[in-house]
Each structure stands twice: as C-alpha cells, then as structure tokens.
Length: 383
Image (cartoon, rainbow, N blue to C red; front, side):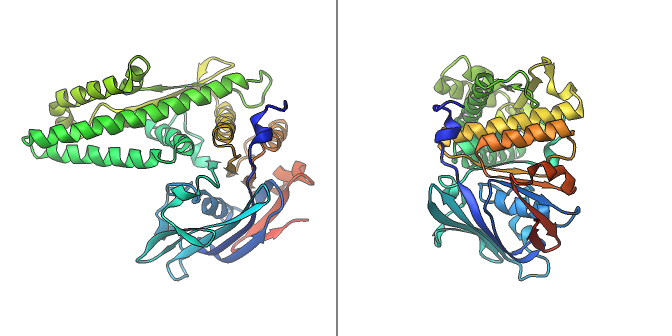
C-alpha cells in the first residue's frame, strides 16, 4: 500500500460501546468493543441480525430490513426502543443515538443533543451492508437494484434520499391528476415541471455515483482477486440523455416526454418514463458475462466485490472509512475465499461486523478479531 493510498489517510471511526433498550429481542444490552473486526456467531434466530439492524439505522432510511420503526420495538416492552453507541474517531469520542417512542416517532441524538434526522450522523458515520436478501440482486427485480444504487448514492450525497422521496411524491400527485381525467392541464404542467427537475437531479446523482464507482473498480482491479471486478452502468432514458447533453436540456426534454405521454401513463396507471424505471446493468468483468447469468457463487463473490468497492469509494470521498455490516457472510464461501474475504476486510480499514451461525467459519479470525456468542437477549465474548 503506497503512502498516497486513501485507506491510509482516511479517518477510521470505531464503535467502542453499543447499548440497546427494548430493541427487537433485546430488553437491555451494553457491550464494549475493542477490535475492527467483530464476528457474531450463534444459532439462527438468536438475534445476530438484530444487532446489525440496530447499527444500520444510524444511516438515513429504515435500515437493512427496511422495517417501520414501531416494528423494531420489543414485543414485551413499552412500544419504544433506544440504540446508542460511543464512536471513537482519531481519539475523539462521540455519542450517537436513535430511538422510537409511540406517539412521538423517531428520535435522534448527537452528544446528548437532539438531531433532526439520521442525516445528521453522516459527517460522523457512514454505513454500508450486505445481507442474504441481497443475494438475488443481479437476477431479481430492477427495483432492488435501484435501491442498491440509491443506498450508495445516499452515502455520497446525504440529500439524495430526500430528493427521491419528493420525486416519488410528485409522481403520485401527477397520477392522481391523470386518474381524475387529466382535465386540470395547468396543474399537470406544474406537476410535470417539478417532476422533471427532481427526476433529472435523481438520475444525475445516480449516474455520477455509478461512474465514480466504476472508475474506482477499474483503478484497483486485481486479476487474481477472489472477488472479481464488476462492470456496471445505468440503463434508462434520462441517463442516456445525460451522457450526451447538459442537465438543463435533459430537464426540458423530460418535461416534454411527460406531457406527450399523459394518455399512455393514464392507461398504465403510472409514469412509464423517468428514473423510477431505470436499471443497474452489471457484468462479471473477467468472464465478460451478464451477472444475472453467472452461478450463485459467482454472483455472491461479485456482490461482495461491489460492496467492498462501495466502502472504499465512501472512504475516498468522505475522508472516513464506513462501518461495514455483513450478515451471514461466510456460509457460502469455501475456506480459500473466506480467508481472502477476511484479508480484504483487514486491508479495508473499516470496522466490520460479521454474522454467521457456525463458529467454525470464524476460526481463522482468532487473534485477529473479537468473536461474540449471541444467544436470545444476550451477547458474550468468546475466549
């Protein structure tokens, strides 16, 4: 690693303490952490993923399960929950917390002071994750791939999520106008103007992020890596236009497209053009084959490579290594690829939380990581 390698100069936030109250299966939990690699092992249903979910909710959105906040409260509890961490970065310790109370909604705190949303944590902590539900990313519906790119874009631009939400809200408003017969042309024109501005902003942010990620993948390619490089691109009408024209011109063209497609969209019950229909195309670089046509193992390795690249991109752009959450990460890899994964994670510089049912999977990490046994409601360090 050269002295100019961003991994060497980036800040390296590390969670030193994790506290839960009435979150999922945990009535109360307070654990100290001292390592960058954290392995959570225990039987299925013991609560390993619950811990990762609690950490994932320090990022904007609903966390790795995409659950409503009230569903995260322990069923036998008061209906609310709280999650707190002590985060150490270059000797400075910050206290971050999020929670939920019935009738009050989500709550956020930084150093014991109220914060407006999880977006306020972005300067202190970035979070990326990989879960078993994402294993079918390349062969599944396009919506899953859009969410994947939006998560990555959100790490680069904390305002991206708000723009996506406003765009979707504007689309729903236009749909209602079309459902009413589309006679309110003045209101339709105003809605389409707003949709065009928001839609081009969303598409531009996604496109720029994908291009940055691909550039990083190209510049760090290792032919012998256990996690092959991907070739990724966005497919969509706006993305194609943005590659050839300035955003202001694309915005006007998109507005015209919406105006011309009112009758077709009314019949379909939704807008048929725009970033809500875009897709992420991925290819297995070494094989030059569509990712969706690769074997299950190849797709998993390709996805791990993408998430590692995502973490490195965030470290480069934000100047701080992100927290990485890997749920049931090692079960489908052979011994050689598991060791390669652990080596990559050590080089990454992030604090990494991994889960797996079989403690044997983490045996190579003895002396290199903290390994915890998770049982219902409890977490204990394994010697």
